[in-house]
Length: 89
Image (cartoon, rainbow, N blue to C red; front, side):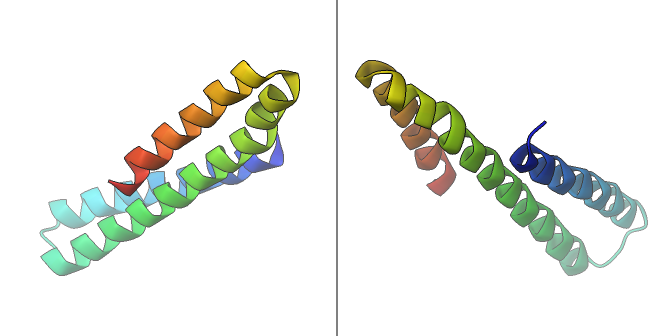
């Protein structure tokens, strides 16, 4: 596993812990705004992990596809554009 994926995996493990904590907060009937704040924190970390994954993809798979040939590179670029489109919605 390369360094970019290790960073993403570490963030995802942190989110897993946050989710467990959020579930416990809900079960303990904690204040809704506090729960919501923790949910937003987990969402932000998920987004950062996604950026790490996409960064690695662009720097390896997309770069290699572009160097190998025009049609493969175009396909990879289109994949990234589709992901970005989903991300901003």
